[in-house]
Length: 226
Image 1 (spheres, rainbow, N blue to C red):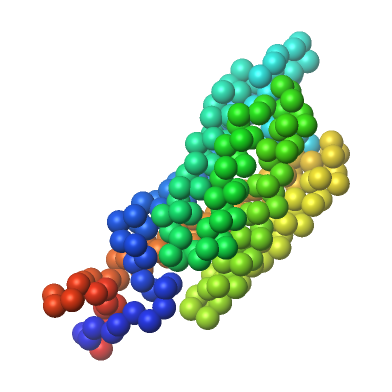
Image 2: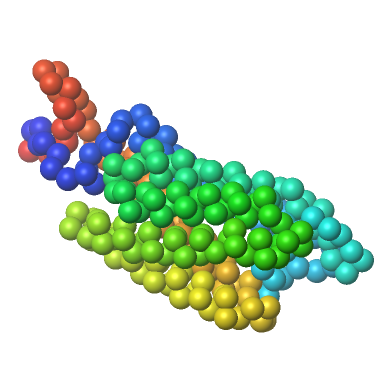
């Protein structure tokens, strides 16, 4: 077995422990989908994942026609998972690069703001809070894929494709308004991002696992079969 120096940021442990925490933050974010399922199951008056927006699950007010009694869980998840996105991006900034980091921080803060502005309390404020999330995430995925194309071409291609699909879905969601497929389009704009960023985070943890410091200098090196 020989020791080979790392030559690209994609095969480096980033900023050590901080980067690992950042990767873990992105890895747990797909659990957000479970909160939608839990909250939707408790709604009264009928809720459709196909036609109803995610934001309806966070509506605070109740009526005879519709009520989401677990709205606090939904709004809390907007804030909590948004904070994980922003924090994870900052901790992984060395691997992500400044543009992707900035876009993901904006996305995370947008998610937090969405949780603080429920749809039925102020629809305009809610839309203003949520819009950056739908714009910044697809662009971040495309830029991240482009940044990785030389070192991890398969993942890079997947991230770019995911960015294109989620961006198109976001535009279609806006154009669909309250159409019969609005809920499906919104989720197509959001859910794949969770998986794509989690896949990226997994590569960061895997890269960490293949490095060790040299006794003399403490530099990270790759364990490569010789």
